[in-house]
Figure 1 (spheres, rainbow, N blue to C red):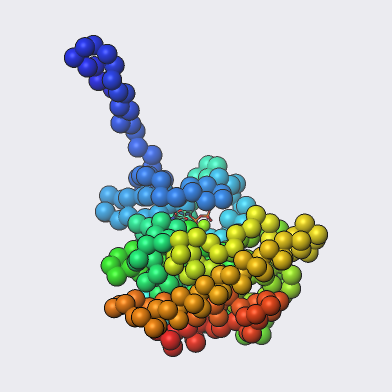
Figure 2 (cartoon, protein in one colour):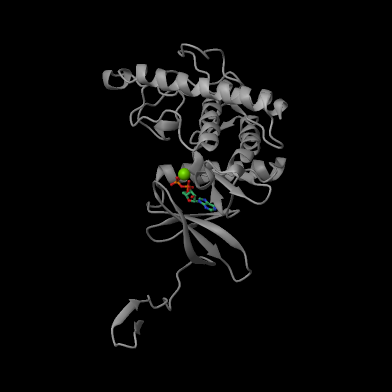
Length: 303
Ligand SMILES: Nc1ncnc2c1ncn2[C@@H]1O[C@H](COP(=O)(O)OP(=O)(O)O)[C@@H](O)[C@H]1O
Ligand SMILES: [Mg+2]
């Protein structure tokens, strides 16, 4: 459709609305909610006024990664339904196979992720709630494995967190179990705990990420972002470690100082999580702050 101005010029071109809407199974496909590594996530609506998130993946049926993702989604959905997660875990409603796409259908649809809210007042309030979602899966043997701000949905007032992208979670049979490192595979290196690509690791890698996310939402930026993981074997990685350690210690000192300052001059309703974030960010090779990383129980008691 074209708008013609009184002088006869074409001022703007407004796209003509599409007459044909796309459907996937019973779902009418709406706006894009987000993009990920394998495809897009769209809003979907049904004639019964149900609203879902359609995660459309450009992969062939039988693709191993997709099969594993939807299976893990299904197990976690069952757990969350059976044991009441307080709405903290994304549910998979169904899986639809189209010709060259596979679609995993999720609820709830969240209006934001923590990435949209980083630095805002409400985002800090989501951290304890997110931690309880992480604790819910940890207590049942699962670790999320790919926590980061874009994988934590936020909805409602007061804001409540929903763990998204749970399909790559890993399961450990027993409390002493561990996963073998797989350098270069999966996840997002800027959120990897130092041990993750160097030695067998466990649920505690999720706690490290929560420390990073907590820092990010408090200060508006990642505390020590590197394109390469300094904590992987190999010269090009290892040579980054002194710079990492410097930025790391600065971040830990800032958390401690600001937390102390907030305690000394309390502002109504404001809790600075600095000392707990620092405990979540412990790692064995740190020059200071090298004690065992805190567990979520200790954090939860604090709140
Ligand atoms: N249930 C949902 N509601 C709203 N947005 C969502 C939902 N699920 C995913 N998204 C958006 O889509 C993005 C990609 O989805 P995600 O499942 O994380 O895919 P990927 O595995 O490719 O990272 C998310 O970061 C988020 O912005
Ligand atoms: Mg994701």
